[in-house]
Length: 502
Ligand code: FHN
Image 1 (cartoon, rainbow, N blue to C red):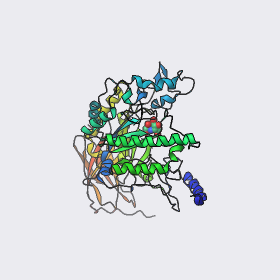
Image 2 (cartoon, helix red, strand yellow):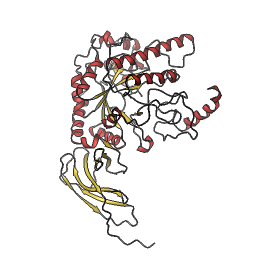
Image 3 (cartoon, helix red, strand yellow):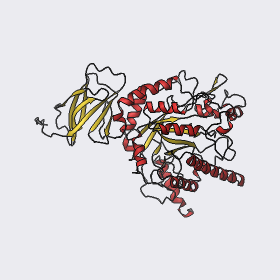
Image 4 (cartoon, helix red, strand yellow):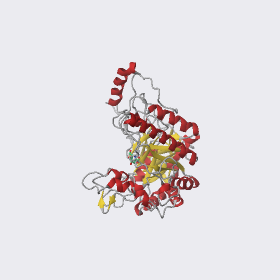
């Protein structure tokens, strides 16, 4: 490896410039001109075609749940808000600055002694998630604070040592599976209060021994989770950005192999590991390191092109940031039903899954706001299900909203109308070369037929065709609505207008 050092440095500089290694996630990802040899690159082929991955692509909507000790303070302590001192509510252990309570870390690390969620009912959560239309859930088994919501044999800092005692992960896995919702386990590698965890690349013998123990511990826990909850469909990894973990590329490569050997259908995102050149998510040749892109956290691709055909999910908070419970959301913008409909359909129009996060309180209750959102959003996903699940990207854009097309027949096109035109006429623009064009249209929610006609707008030398759909004046929609458009073989006969003489 030493021989190639200068090439590697050059290449790293290139990748850095290209935004692959440490640049902006949303930058266009270029591949290096000259491919380099990567030993610890991708283990699975991109675009896996097996049934598990096919199911992943059809989920459409997921639910994320961040639950742990941070639910007890709920972003404040003794009436003092952590807003100015902590990055997010689930980061409250790292509260810094003048507002930090005295002995805060100590207080936080002892919160497990009072974790006793008296209203926790996994069945109720799962039922509500189903009502919302979620097809998969990502549940925090252990966040950065290291507290395990399952009774891990390998740690004392677990639910077993809380007054609650019972295995929370098991209840979630069972309840959601029972509702037909696939379960993915969120697992933070980084642990703030584990004495063996070393952030930087271990240098001293002591650091090396500690971190070695930590790696073994991580492996044990992951194998334990797989053995305890064999129904899980995948892991959602986090906290994998520290130099110590990045430097453990051989270990993480082998661990991913082992997890996949235990369950060949397992789905793992791109956040788990990096190659030997510190390239995370994508290897140094731009190949995805996992089954789907896992970097779309509170952000969206500007267009499908940037994704290079990779599968992906977008995970999103309801408040601006903050994944764990927040007692007081005064003055915070909370995403509305309209917002989440928009984000869901934007994701679906680019073949991604949209995952909405919930942060239950210390007793296991979702907030009033979250509950209302579930109900409202769920009503929408129910009547518009055809446009959300088992659909593909459609390669045209619409100024009214987002297109998705049925995978089943390839002829049912859905237009989610976010921007309703003032004149109530939706003008669809199709290239003249299109094989399939709109033949009929109806409202998806009440199946009402809509007037559709091809309109020659008289543009000279136009490459496009136009189809006008008239919306009924009586359409008083509360939220975005979906038009189902049946496509059919295009009739090419058109009245030829005279070309302009120029
Ligand atoms: O630091 C975490 C954060 O608390 C939260 O868990 C999110 C969820 O995607 N992930 C990390 C930040 O990238």
